[in-house]
Image (cartoon, rainbow, N blue to C red; front, side, top):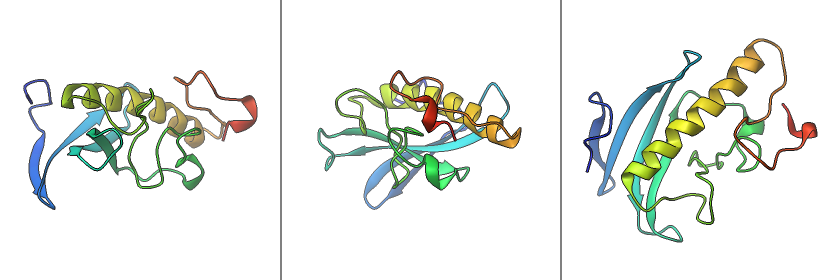
Length: 128
């Protein structure tokens, strides 16, 4: 089940849940730490991906703007938004999200506004 996760992935039991924490170094060199876990209380139940680090702008913590919820769970798209049916899907989507968020962070560090690059529903006025 975890053979496709990075070899440096840490497994922990937190609150009775299995949690896999991995680091994703993006193409622009920004490192993210993301936790994956199964949440039976989500609708529908499934695997969530939650940002551990780095901290991101408060204004980006929105499922539409930065594709992340206020509780740090990454918006994985589709009808369920917060979950995927498999650990592999949640891992894959969270890696793609990290690449998009890295572009936003890099743009901010360079003094430029940016919108999430992989979204089809952004408006120019949402660039931050």
